Image (tube, rainbow, N blue to C red; front, side, top):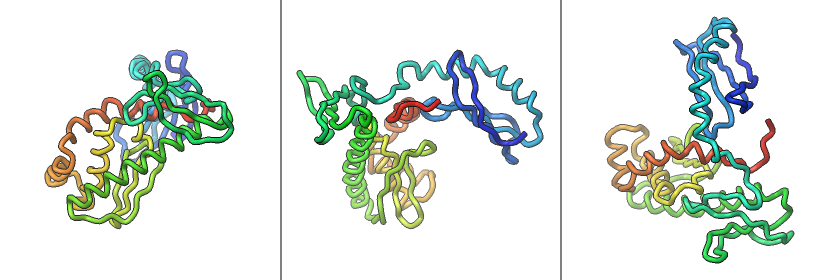
Length: 243
């Protein structure tokens, strides 16, 4: 069976289905993509179409159960929507002004993200705000942890990655997902410490985790948070869905 992209109906919810043939696969594996916006199926080579279809039918209830976790979490950013900023829920308010900065403030004691510009650009402007905040917070914490561990880094970059929250190259380049700006600050701190620890240990062995916990004592708690809540950060859409 060749690689293909189609759609799958999961309890009335139509999602992209990405099928990939892998020579290393010994059995079919099914997963929900981060954010719940697509389904991926990996299959060994040589399987017939009816075998794949049968596998999907047998796991239909499992897919419905997994997708139910995203109910109410799959939101598109817009006026009146709720967006977490460092773990604090902010209500988005469109200022109506064509010019002006996007800023977090309080209105009647409640956190608000005030967004200016055309209404059609609210999602993009909110994403730009998170990117700026992620860079500010991550850069500060990377510098702190690098100093504490006696290491230096080359550069920091931000992308909208789904497979990992961060990475560290052998040349000292650190990469982060800007969506981490929606997570609580102790999780942001852990992610910065995690990648800085890779400057000393390019692995996930005992010495790496010991260093990571020395730099960020809340490492175990932050790892649990990302495992339980991280996928929901990818469920937030900053552009209207195209499917």
